[in-house]
Image (cartoon, rainbow, N blue to C red; front, side, top):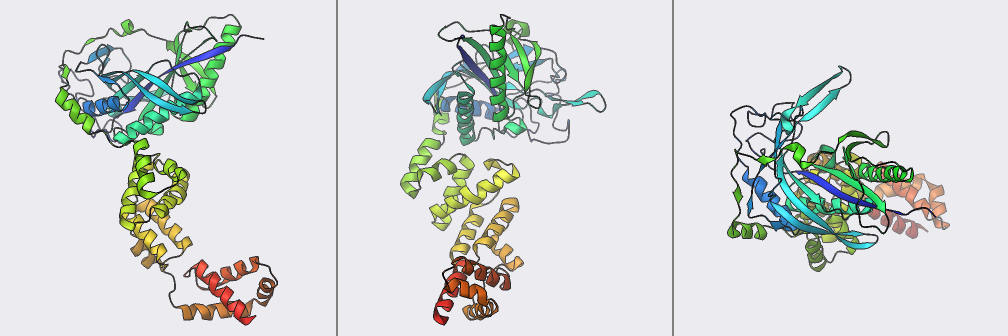
Length: 480
């Protein structure tokens, strides 16, 4: 029997904070602007420009620290991390090495093996770098500095995770906490949440850590899982072959399902850290810290318990609608207007999640207003529109948040309320399809579905299928 190995994993998670302006200047942090339009002398690193800390960055960092059970550093400061790279216009990054704002925290995760505590070594504030765009057609590299100076927190875990499942559970927990705080949208695909994986393997039963590598360029949970599985196997193969593992930074290539070396891993001394001379230390008072504690929101677990108590929802519904703070807020605000919690939940779990998957969007992208969703639910309940029409209206609301009443009027989707006119149509349909009528009377239940479909066709969808079915049954029973 061969040797058994254990994988040891720690994460460095970078999160872009949801401030309107950058960490040390007044430039916009909006995603997707034209290249180099959200810039100024400060974030471009021009000589003589001076940084000023954005107070909101400190607030978000402290809130994330409190939510993850961290100790808050009452006297923290910024340091310069010196290195040359084209996307780093100053030739240094302003970060926190010696006195980070948050330290010694933890979060609880749930996996198939049960609950586990993952330690957080520290959370520090720093600025993001610009973005390099490699143009293979022109064989050149372009630089967009819009992202330079966007505020980040870096959440550094302890090496407490042992497999990809625990890593994903940890990232999901962080994303949930941070999104409930409103500190970031945590969109991996847009780079507002990025994870670097530090991984080593060691012989099972030993305490000494193996040589670690750091993997970058991981922008989805799928890529993170594949990268972990690939790297742990690569390291085991090296150990089995008697070859050394080199401490280095590796880049994950998701398209080719492999990683490759980028550079040898630097130590802190290679960056020549020293206190930033342009930024004063940050002193956090007990009074201000108490205000931050009071600002903590109701998190998922508390929200689930309250929703169960106040709205009587099943556990399955609670799991779905509280997976996002935005979804939970939409549920509660809509329910307050229409007083139908289960129906609101059904729309969110059904059509809403379907459209989010199809459009490849996050719950944070939902633009439907509670007033419009409540109005749609009440229109359906009153029989003003049928189920198929309601789904069409919902999709229009998902895309543009249209007013459901106006949309139904413009499209002529209102259910025909004249029962005499409907009975006349039913009589015509029954007379035109004697075979289906005979099949139904001979016990073929599916035949009535065909007759309902023909009626809806004549009515151009302006009828309720359930009401049509009941009226058909009554008509056929009378005639038999």
